[in-house]
Image 1: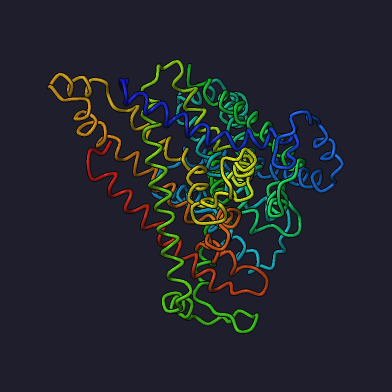
Image 2: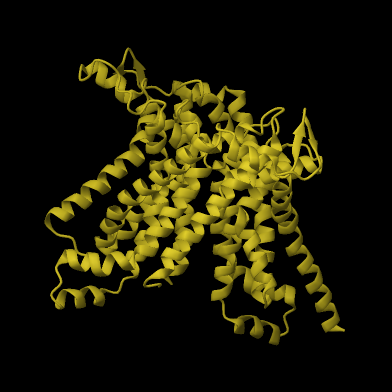
Length: 263
Length: 284
């Protein structure tokens, strides 16, 4: 649509190229040094090995932190899916001002800086004497990803024709049957896509987690504590694995998000 | 019978959907606000209302300067992000539609990559002891490490800009995509040069996207406390870090809460200003 010619075109391409290099370059370097050694200020080109990855599997902290992260992610996504779906149905099926207020409350943790969401929860848990643990982390993550899940499901719900539900009810289906056999299959891709995105967000969440966690570490927190010490090949190996994992998850989600729109 | 049952169901649904957001979002925020009007004596929180925390913020010379420096830093991040994001968004919009969305995706995917990892990767490159310096040293290009980006404010600015730039690219790209082709043709037909069309048509129509991108990056940059800590050293002691430090062991939670309320106020002001500018002209 926009046209760019000559010098302008060249400038645009260079800026875009530069930023792409700056965005991906550091990550590429980290991946590179998970395979190669760096000694006396030089890359050891003959040192290619999977040693760093092997060392990683023997590290109990990594395995523990990964377990915590997955547990938190799955629990938070499950909770967010249940409440997000209920909220979307409630908003879709009601009128008036109240539902707008409710929606505003749900959006708050997503638009506020994460430090504020984290601190608010931290103070709340202390006031009600609830000890910090993975449970509080799950609550924090659920609150954080709820808006995304809710928004995605509501958007899909609003594209569905009301006559679908009416037809189902007219044909004698119960409300539960209508939900189970008519609405849910139509919502499936939206639910799946938001679940995957929410999981990716939870997997990576650092700022809220840092504030509401007890003694258990999730992967980002454990990485953070390590990185303050310096760079080692096994951190690079872990970084590589996480990048492959999260990028894979995201591309999968993007596929599911975009396919229905193409129809 | 049926209607009664449905209304009971409706009541239950209403309770189920309202309770969690009220308990886990609104209530914590209200407690948070309330906490900022309390004070500590020794290690105990004293439950009587006071403005002492806010008075301390505005009178103690330790806080206001850091606060302003952080606001300025966040503004610089927002400005840098928009300055680089605009040409990129324009570049994306100028592409053929077959590659356009794939390229746009390439600029957005980093958003979903691990935040800590990106900071780590950038830090391992740019620091005084980073790979760039070490390789340049061993090649003999430089004699002493370049310290422009080692544990200082520049490093925070660069890292935050890189982390947040996708948030600026996206709204500007969307705004560019919304401009009808006919407008550009009309402008050209009426004799406007490419620059005049850009200045008179494209730029005003993408103002809203710019403002959304700038306010988003500003808000996130101001609230961040991990990035400054990882790459900023002592120079990168930002407002976010001061807030975070109030919540460690035996520290002053009410004061930390007050500082956070001030942060929230700045965020709200930024969003309101952005909303005003975005709506003032050519609202879409």
